[in-house]
Every structure is written in C-alpha cells, then in structure tokens.
Amino acid sequence: MTKARQLADSAGIPIPSATNPSLITNGDMQVAQRGTTSTEDEYKTVDRFRTSNGGLDEAVTQEHHTLTSSDTGVWELGFRHSYKQTNGNQTSGAGASDRVTIQHRIEGQDLATSGWDYTSASSDVTLSFWCKSSVAQNFYARLQSYGGTQQNYAMETGSLTANTWTKITKTIPGASAVAFDNDNTLGALLEITLFRGTNTTGTRALNVWSTYDTNVRVPDMDSTWYTTNDATFEITGVKLEVGSEATDFQHTSYREELEKCQRYYETGRTSATGYGANGTGFCGEMVDYKVEKRAAATLTQANQSYFSVWGNAIHLATVGQSFALNETNGFYHCAAHGGVNAKYIFTYTADAEL
Image (spheres, rainbow, N blue to C red):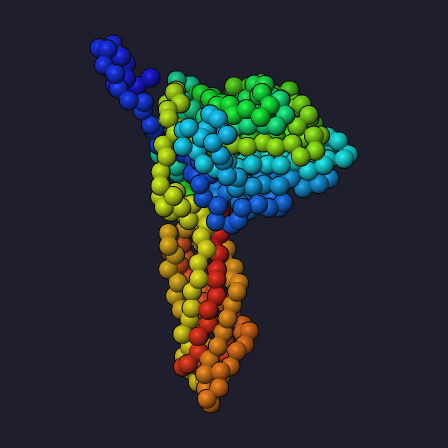
C-alpha cells in the first residue's frame, strides 16, 4: 500500500482506485496486426504475445478472440478481446518433451528503470491477469530474469473452475541475484504454462526465486487439459506493475496500444519512383517507420507491383528488389528495371520482436 493511500485511509478520505503503468504491452489483447488465427508457433496473432509449443500430435490454434457480454467478469471491466488457445488432438498422450505455453517478453531497460528495486526482497512487482479454461485444473506461470545468472520464479493459478473467468494475482518480491540489463535486449520472460512434460518439470518450489534450470522450469503438471481434445484456455487483462498490490487495469485507446506494439512490428505499403533510362534504370525510395523500432528489423516484402511506361506502352514486370540502410527509424529499398516513368509498389513487414 502506498503512503498516500495509507494517509487517506487513516483520515477516512475515500480515494479512487489507483492505476499503475504496466510493464506488459497489449495486455488487453486489443492489437493483432498479423492476423486473427493461426496454427503456427511464435508471434502470429495478438501482438507481443507468442506461443512456444512442441511435441504436438496436432497443432494448437492461437486466436485473437472476440469476447461477448456472456464473458462475465471481464466484459464489465471493458475487456473485448482475449488470447485464446484451442488444443489439438494429442493422440499419443502427454510426452516428456511436449509443451504448450503462452509467453510475453519484456525489454531489460523497461524493468531496470521501472522503479522496482529488484535486488531487494522488500520491493515487489505484482502480476495480475484474467484467465478461463474449459478444463478444471491448476496451471503454472513463471517469470524468468535474463541479466547476470538467470533466475526463475514459479507460481500457480490454483484450481480453476471450468469455463469461468478467474482473476489471478501474484506479488513477486525482488531477490539479490535478480538482474536486468539496461538496454533493448531481453530482460524477462513471462510464461503461462498450459502443459510441460517431465523433461522440463520436476521438484520446483513455488513463490521463490531460484537459479533457472532448463530441466525444471515448473513443478510436474496435471496433463488433463493437454490430453483433452479441443480444450481451450484464454487470457486477458495481463498486467505487471511495481508495488505490492494489483491496481485496476489501465485501458488505453487502440491507437496508443498500436503505437506501443509497432516498436516491435509494423506493416505498411510504399512505392518507389523510377530514375535512369527507361527499361534499364532503378526504382528507389526511403521509407520512414511509423514508430522507431527496438532494433534493426527483419524486413519482408509482398504484393509487389511494378509498372512503367515507355514507347507508348505499359510494361508490367516482377523485378529484383533489395533493402538497404536498414535502421531503427526506417529503410531504403530499390528495384531494378525502372526508368523515369516507372513505379514500384509493395507491402512490407518490419519485425523487431524480442
């Protein structure tokens, strides 16, 4: 409890519920630039949230899911989307190397400068999120630090009632071995573990920091959800904040959340004007990103269209194209076979995810 709230409470003065900034981007799952559904791993739907799955007999489907008024508990609080996982049919059962996880990655500098005294056991951050499982079961979550010697903090949801939205709140103290580098590299990983086989589970104490062990990330797990065909799990309202209390989720506009997500990924459409001799010149243009990227992005292009006019005819072609001057604030692209009347149009994606 903050000093201001303590003073207000002692004086009998009512104050509104506090809202602290969250270290999680897109925690209410508003933004999904890549698409609405996918059976692939990694970042494919909801921005800043990814799946890391393995050993599956049938792929898990990740989804940018639209909530309705029947989603009691979260709908009234303004949540309109969730990140939903639908299990496949794992016919060979729960294998030792199998896993289904939801992950969110946080830059080191965001944690280092957050105001959390993460090396002190008397300084806390609080994790909160809403989740719903179609199967009644206990699940695990963990926070992993990447600075210095990696540390792991495992937690549990407690037994969830099937098909019921439940708010999970966990207060996480600092510890002397926890460290975050003050830069744009990976600082911490938050994982919601839907299933891990025995290759990565074992005897692991809950609610305490300990050295990260790739072979024991969370305690041994119940496999009921994993072995139930088409079982579902949803999360929304994910928040990690400095302090020992979970405050109300701080909703922002779609535009604001989109800009935060575009630090890591954006899509766009651009064109280049030709120069040089008709039919033998080049098209080239500098593209400025909508938002400066975390790091130099991986660039891809698609839907290319090239046309030029010379000799009273329109010439269409698929041409060689390359990226250059790839920087955090933009890139230069050029294409062969241009000319003074040429135009080269394409869409691009810029991926600078952790």
